[in-house]
Image (cartoon, rainbow, N blue to C red; front, side):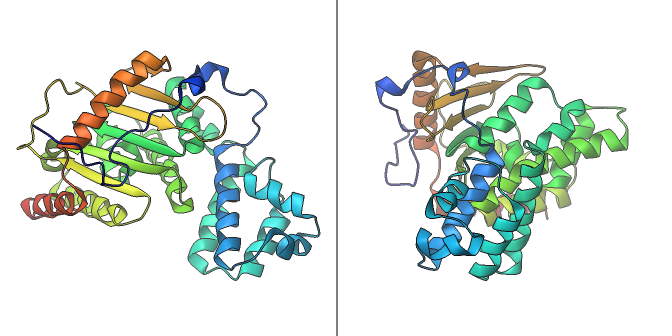
Length: 310
């Protein structure tokens, strides 16, 4: 029998207070911040706090008040690029973080960066991408392939090429760029992610051994970051009544409806928002989490799988 590892970071999906449960369709209509604006504000706040500065210390840098800085950090309105760059240079951030800030600014310029891909993205997936940018935590379970949020470009390209047989190279590459764009959020520290992967995902050849080695090594690398938890469910830890397809549970902390469950099918998807439905999948994910190996053992299984593709 699998046991729950409550000491493992984010091993169990939290249950919100009853009064918080509500339909995502009723999400606050006056909420203006996009996922990118929110992420950019979080990063600016983190930079300021790392330097031990208060709001009043940096307000003169952007020729404004404490409330202006606070609004910028909360992502309540589209940021002015001059203000962002003035703060970034004042904080003396390294080149790597400058590139991340530029990526987030590019996304905020178009309000929703993924809108440029609407021609190759079904409506149900566009909704998920928007919600991913607003989520505080994401719990995902996969039984067949690596979750889209965690895929390398080469791995994604193989899957999309197989699904779109006969599609043009440009159509395939646009879908690859879209999927890779979803990874930008991680470089800003949120959402936090728990990925529960069946061991079969590690062993199933996608493309070539080279593609698999790169993909699995990427999972090891991001699993060592503070905000991403890769957990493998070994063949030896059977779980009864596991889902037949992937499950994604998103949790929000912005004062709107706190959570939803996303179930993707071949040409459609379901968004579950009723408390009873969400509780069912929360129970499933918690049970799977109890069957999953811890961080150290999961990394060992990933390394073992890499060796198998050598």
